[in-house]
Image (cartoon, rainbow, N blue to C red):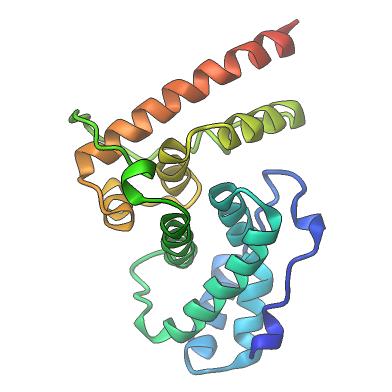
Length: 210
């Protein structure tokens, strides 16, 4: 089965909107086969979602090389955990939560957890309704590039929860469990991340309007 999880080509580092995927009908047909151990079915899942997993891993880990290794490991873990998948949860969200947890574990190995996630005091309410992702809402290639650069320039303690929220579509509670943080602190970090992101994007917005 390991031959399925080959390193992704550098072409995966293309446009932010090219996330791959699989239509719901096809996914519903493939999942039972994958859960029963059908290697060909799981290979279809890999081809459909590997780009999206790679994108999240690259944003979190900071390099294509680390993301390639992480993507392979994430799919191996997903394969082993297929029997635990609950169809009440959207499959992409389940898969990206595995990726998010793995990448956070890798970041913890790089540095002390206390340095990466500094305790902060605040209690911000999670917005009602999930709404469209601001990371997915940019329409032009120039804006996509500006957003990508701005996100990569965020401090890791802000970048990780922001990406888990808007890229992996995880709830505040799920992010808190992943990062081992209380929900209130997750809300604070995401609030500050978006504030910093807006600050970074302001010059690019002015330039695009010019």
